[in-house]
Length: 184
Image (spheres, rainbow, N blue to C red):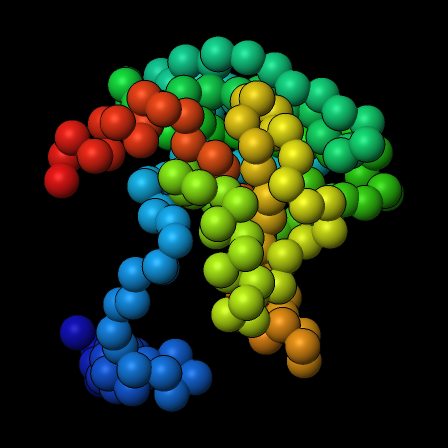
């Protein structure tokens, strides 16, 4: 291992010991809701065909649907990785018009979706704690579950965000909540 690699690892370890922005490295559970797992990963490109070929034809992840919405400027293939209530949806997205917003292909890792057991409680609690949400509020998502998004950038009033990544909160259906509870 080179000296440069060792220095980078040491620096990274030192940063992790200090915690991001000087915050303590502790995990605090939310008071009124739970994050149950990853619901989806959304990947964008100017043309979804190469992504679909990679994920479905080469990696063998089955396509289970399509979704197209002019308002959201998105045309996507919906794939399903895994089985049961904790299967992860993989959304392969391309913009309908690359010149219009939202630009679902920028950044390429567009967003990560997290199952929550009570989306309204999550929005209320996180908002009170300074988390910035994207416009649109709670609304039905492509898969039929209620969703809302944490903004990728904070501001002076609401400083906490996805730090460059859009994070989707997805209301978990009863079977996901029951499966999660059965694991505890």
